Image 1: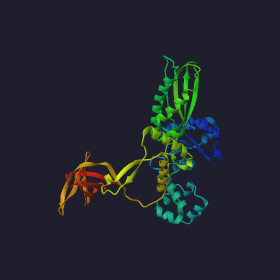
Image 2: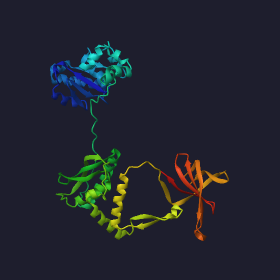
Image 3: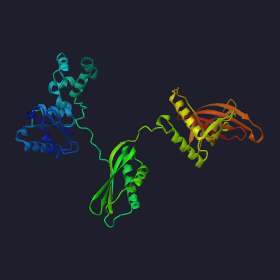
Image 4: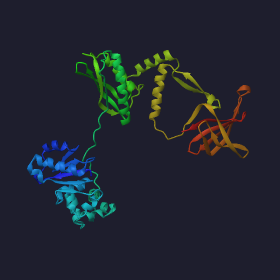
Length: 434
């Protein structure tokens, strides 16, 4: 049983708000809705809790002793039991909500005036009469509102009487009594351990913290709270510890520290849109160019672009040349503009940095050796279809080459590119399409 519904004619329009306080000592959640009071019974003993609620009403005011209670698995059955049952307390057996509603007139479900007029012309009087109709029959005759009403007659009530329970935000604490810490670097060590457990809890929830409070318990039995706030929601332990190291230097402790409590005050989703540091609209182009220049001075050629020749082999066709910082900024704007232009979906060839040696089983087709399966270091792959060979040869002396390329569809639907070195007979995986 999930719902306890209470109704009293003495309440008229609405029950007094002073009833909530005594009820909340018995059940976790209470909601007033018009002349009804709802109590959440999930996880509680049904009959014992219901009796305690009724006693709380009697203790509040003698006139409320005539309150009627309905207990059911669905909200509509509990409401009808509280309003229209002849008994003081009505327990609707689990799984029999529809049977309980069947003998009641459809008026107990509260149809609106327009829907009531439509129902008058159908001859439907009881909930069982409406419930036995099909969805299509109700929708054609009574429309969308009629379908919602029909679901209530079948005890199919999707109303959310109680909202979701708010989850407690993560926190962690550590106390010690044999000694007191006065050095900030030792406090950082303890805070780092606390952030480890808090960040793991945040990652499990799929959220990041925006604000946290570090409470320092002092030897003079007082507490010093120090809030820390991040620019963006994050569950990264390293990101928070960078902020802590900056903040802890400015904290003045009136006494030695005997304990630390770390509380998360605010959380948010971590899937926010990340801005592009190269975006001219961010006004950060000059700072990004300066930072790139410093990195290139320290690290060398960290930014490169391809230059293609007319060589027939793709792995020998491209050479990489270094870029200056202004050139990187220019190329980033060109690349961003190309991404914004929509185009037709297409497969792109992905080449391995170096062709990978594989073992291939073949069969003969028109005098050519065609791959049937290939095996790499991980597994063996069945080839469903192989197109080829496409022969490429050239060069001279030590630079000579001769290859037979095959475009192959493997069993999982992937498209791979294999070739056989005609000079050595070895097979290689050159890349794939995605």
